[in-house]
Amino acid sequence: MPPTAFIDTNVWFSAFYCSPNAQRIITAHLHGKIQAVISPQVLTELITNVKLKIPQALSPLENFLNLSPPMIIKNPATIPVPIKSLAHHHDAPLLTACYLAKIPYFITGNTKDFNIRAIKTKLKIDVLTPNQAVKLWHF
Image: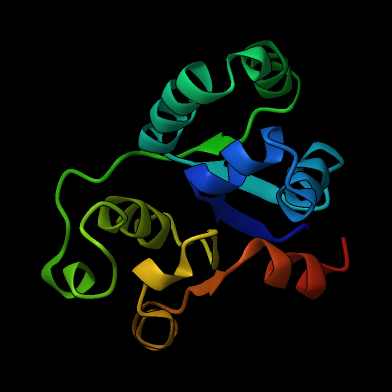
């Protein structure tokens, strides 16, 4: 069974903005080498950002999502107090969704917004950059 990873909005966006490592991750999902997971918040942010910043990528994004949809997990109703201190307030709902769904990996281009060591220790989630994920899984 392929590894399951929550993919942050910035990685999806970067894949459609021609970032090689982000593209490798999304392509790995397409080929079944990983199971990509997102929340409705990620999907909304992604579509909004693509429409605003790279509208020419909207059609390819829609085609990709229809061809190989990621697993969509629920947005959390609340953020547990312990998680609030582990991530920037904007990212805490994403980390919470990942934790509640028991997803072992969280891939983001903005690792500075996360207390990576504490997340690994307390939540048992590996927060990885796209580069780290590509190296870990040899994409």
